[in-house]
Image (cartoon, rainbow, N blue to C red):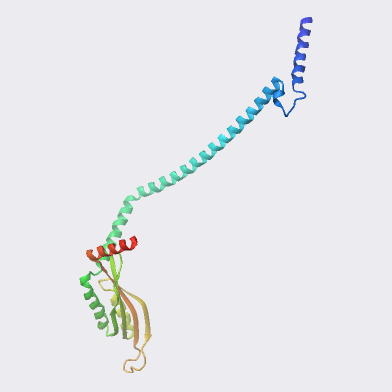
Length: 229
């Protein structure tokens, strides 16, 4: 019984001794603390530092994870777009063939340089065939584009309303492309008593033609020289 009491006394003394080490500590000078408080402080500081590093690492990982998620969403969108294109590739090829056929059809309606005079004659004959009187028929300056040329023609004709309407329809039905622009229709001065109800059609007809290979080469050379400047 005496031995057991001695052990209890020694344990209590040890607890009191441990508690005494935490009393009266100088917070401004931890180096002067007893060993156990220093170890406890070191453990707490180490735990705090480790926790801070862990949180920063988790934050970086979270940012990286979010970036990968966005990248995944972008890749999924790209994949779906490419998959849709791949599925509709045959249909797109058919549409391309149809467009090319339509372009070829339109190209055939463009006169060549040698056919321009014949086309101007067709426009003139379309007016005369409708009993219209040409007041003005003047081709303008040729406007050269990349692969074609545009020729504006100032046109003024006089005649009756229905004849002028039929003339514009004939122009639209020519085998070559001709457009009427800036159309103005006005009554003619009443001095001409023999033809009452006569109207004046003032318009700009535009037709287009192919460029010859030499003209295309010259146009490209001019464009390159302009870009170099």
